Length: 398
Image (cartoon, rainbow, N blue to C red; front, side, top):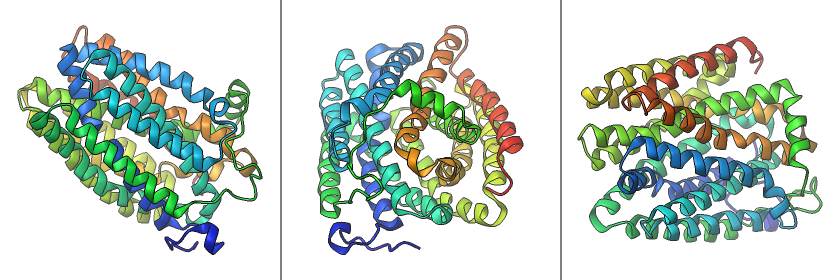
């Protein structure tokens, strides 16, 4: 296994190990987690209804999707370490706009927050694919997700507490402080650009050509679908789970605690990684989808009338989703060709944008006729289909 030393690569000449990327990702997760739940609650406070929050999410997701596909043009001349720095700075800018507590500021803040996350996701994925062997991914990825769990256990509840006790500026200032710590850690480590990418940049390319190339590879399409399904659950959970608690009269603090509790369950990602190592990634992914589907439908049926029961089912769904967090990215990491990593990673990453766009569009329509529980019923039906596809088409040898 690659060395897990936290020493700088440029000085040691060795590859960064799983622990290096786990530490960076954990601090990056803290930056985003501190305002993750605050964003949806603040949008609800400003707009007054779940349906309008869905419409706002749709607008931002569509804009971010277009921006993500254009990122290589914008960052094409930057070395990856500077691209990562730009992503962290974008998160800081997002916090400043979100702190304004206005509809306009919230829209701009959500845009910069999602774009910053996209940049960090792409660049860190490239670093991981360069430094971690494919045969070690089933061990390294659950470790990275498990360590980040502590950030997500602390961040959401802390952010909501700061928001309710001290106002919209408080969680955003905390997020900015964490982002500054992330930049410091990243530049101390100074992850090197590999020889396989001589320019060390994100290399500009044609987004349409890359999408066509991606779609023509069945294994990449399947990997995208798995990631899309996983992200749909988490996006719905993070946005509509707190809104369900608020509309049920349970309160914002309980909503924040629910999100933090769900992230504690991500510690199970390592367990699912061990199961995948023994029984295969395909079986674990398929069962996780099935359990998430059951939990989502059950939570939707419980709805506002039984909010605590709905919360219990959502947390069970989060437990199942932790399995996909641990091993759900492996189909892509094993399928992508080394010379296409940069181009395909940018296309693959759009699963996040589509998971925010498509469900929000559907939910905005559904919430015009039904109560908020309907979003989880719709989600459960979709997850059942995705689980069946994964079981049918993922290779048994994965």
